[in-house]
Image (cartoon, rainbow over all chains, first blue to last red; front, side, top):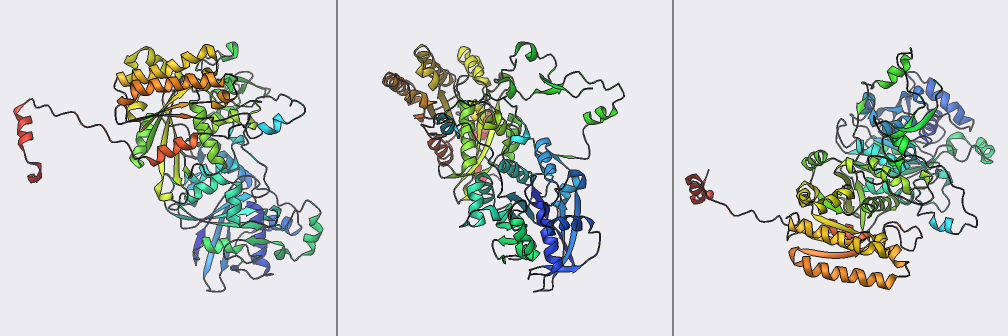
Length: 280
Length: 348
């Protein structure tokens, strides 16, 4: 059996843990046809079972704290070919990526995670506030305001105010220099909370170009380093904090998952993983 | 230990807390990287708080990654061992808009492709973010400002890699110089300092900024115009600029000029200045061009980065200037003459 460890990159609340929970249910339950199925249940799955319980109840999946970071391995096989693969995921907390950007350091394990032939799952969420807004952008709004706005306290620069797409570009740029091994890597951009994107939905890549243009330009201009595909994923199937929850609970769990992207069946989260694992 | 903090400078001896002014010239003061939250009282690490000692020690188990700061000349040398770059020297008085020009370009690429170009990478994203912060809503400011470059920072470079849309192989790495306007003023006052401006002989393009805000003010107008003229003269007279070089004289903040009631008077003054500059110095350069920009018009009368498209198109599309021809060989010794007689094509 070949083992491939795919790396996960994403800032806090970008949908990493919810994706992992939904994936675990999907390949374990066998409710819908998927490109990968669970091969054998060997090892410690405490963490996966803990996060999947919340997912099955249509509750918000608990975020991964830096203390709870863990590396999970899922043994799967591809029914079409019989090919067996061990998929490894370091479930890194979003805070650890924020810290990496701010402190300009990372762990040796993180570097080691990029030494193999695995690809990268890069998480962004469609359910995101705007960031990086300039005062010039809101100039017309302020000019049209009836009442003068209250003066606010000036804030010094911190890494927390850096726009998400700038952080992600810099995290990817780290991979292009030592101590990381320089090579082309497959990179699947997973746009989580795809259900909040209004219909008619754009293609996931079009959404990326529109909403995170800096990141999109960077990926498009570095084909020697990144072979990119973009997927729109709703791992919960809708807003579990709102009125949709009852309807979601009535649905077969695997069928509330949606995945939109190249060669992806409607409920199959494994499509990006199959591609990262070498499928052309 | 109460955990309370107060703003202060971590540099020993800095009196910003007393004077309110940064001795390194950072305005606003909050833009100084050393002006940070500090404990209200100095921590005493001898009072048994070993946790404090542990915090102060670097974690040797972590791997260092690139800083993202603006590049020093030494880091630029390292960069050039990796790939070639196009150097753009941006020259102007304090507050003329040097850093604002760079930040406006950066902000424009954050929103999408620009001038037929798209963003391909930057080694200086942290520095760009720091400089752009005071023009963002997150800064808490009511009006945009750009953190001013301190004269103590010396020469730094911002890096942008761009490529024509859909053509990543045609990437251009731009290195844009950034240094305090006070240094250029000093070089005008004392021409012996021109030789210390390392960014100028290295440059493929020179951008000389005429401060539009000063041009609008009658009392400042002639001073602003004369400072550009004198800067160009001192650079030419001291062989910092040569006949193979393209120089852009760029009037900044044209939104202020456009909205001024003295618009016609200003236009005539600027036109006269440009004519005189072309006549007097144009023949000594390959090209002397003039251009207007409004990097950041708060009224949105001009689109963000107005006029910068023409500049960046020029920086990436024109071929690198031919280097000046080598000086004639002076033959002093018999060995020199032997070398001159030797047929190089028959040497092993």
